[in-house]
Image (cartoon, rainbow, N blue to C red):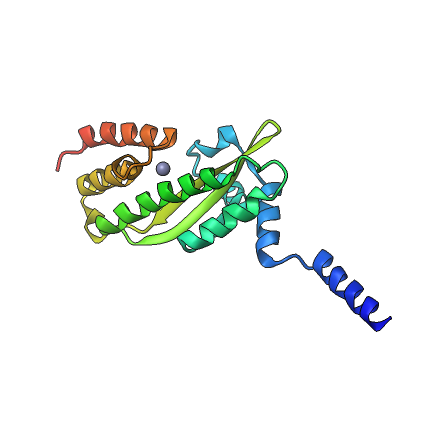
Length: 178
Ligand SMILES: [Zn+2]
């Protein structure tokens, strides 16, 4: 009898106390950002807030792997197959490595949960701080182009948004006269 009670208690705990990770993931899915809102740079406080609510942070590449694996177990996220996860990890790792090479200290990874109609998808990002020599606008833009182009350089492929950003940066470069 005691054993059964104990088991029930454990089960109850499991059901009512999701781990911190699970809670963060569920929250991000609940507040998933619309696809058309993701790439808009409104930069208003409200937009930043809704973006933040849909974002899950991962400190290291293995945290990112763990997070993507956890997500893949959730209904609607079965597009995250093992090979898809590997490709995301290689891709973001390439961005991080080049950020480090150009002197921009990597600060981890972020995954934004995006909803398009009824479907979910994920938008992962590698984040980094400014490099010391980015006081020069031209150097910053040139380094950003290298970081954005990192997946191409390291065997994976750039994402559509990487390439769009590169085009923007190249246009910006033409306007800088230092
Ligand atoms: Zn990318």
